[in-house]
Image (cartoon, rainbow, N blue to C red; front, side, top):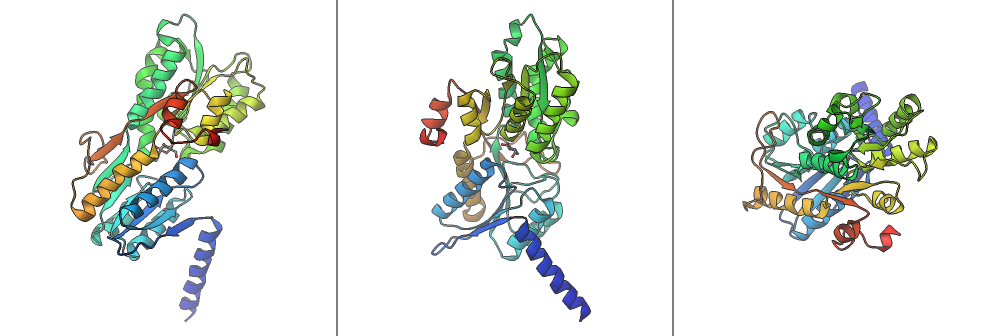
Length: 359
Ligand code: BGC
């Protein structure tokens, strides 16, 4: 009896704490639905995932599926519980953008036992064979695009004077972050080697530059520390940031350290979030990587249809994404570097944002 009361108390405490974390759950009802798809997204703290969730829900409903959409607010255990609940509510397919790509093995085994196919959305699910397909962007390509942008705009190939650079890389539990760093270094390592790029903190490896859970606050703190500890006598010329969220933190740190238009560094980014594009327009961020989440959602839907209706999915890579258990058949969308010169063409004409949104 005591045990029962205790478990009731625990259960209600859990419900309360989940609610307190601000987790979000959206369900849809579709007449004569072809099936129910559970969509597990990592966080609402960054705009891109809000757009991803909204697109997936809209497109899946338009394709005739019911949708249960969940956000885990970057909490691994919360995401595990959400996926357990989706399995218990008998979804027909799971689409997962993991908080930590390597932490879902056990719950994915449960999905496999329940014969629920799993599709990895943007972030690869590691060390599991309970995965049918992977829809993402060319993640190493994101890195090479950032690297090439820096190479070109900083004129590195013909430079005669060194420029300073610091790196702010993605989360160590996200395979995308590892690939992105590899892509960047493929382009920039030669310039670190020949001295045309100087990283005064000496932090260039992935292990030294990765930021857990893509935290904006950590990026800001690191940048503040770098500026006060290493850049008292010399300006930082390039902040090589792997994520728009980091770029906002870097911007705040630079403002705090007294940087102005005169000595403002080149700042990169990823996701072309609304705020980032506004910052590109105002000159406080130099570029971002535009990833059209509408396209990603539509490719992912072809995979859902493949596993549920036996249609052929669109696949364009069967080699690169080895998750430790299998090489996952993937569709990789192409990332595009955007800056002040092409944002109108790529982003406004493409209908991703309207001109009014950017005012
Ligand atoms: C995505 C990026 C995103 C980052 C942080 C990565 O897995 O590929 O587009 O910026 O997560 O949310």
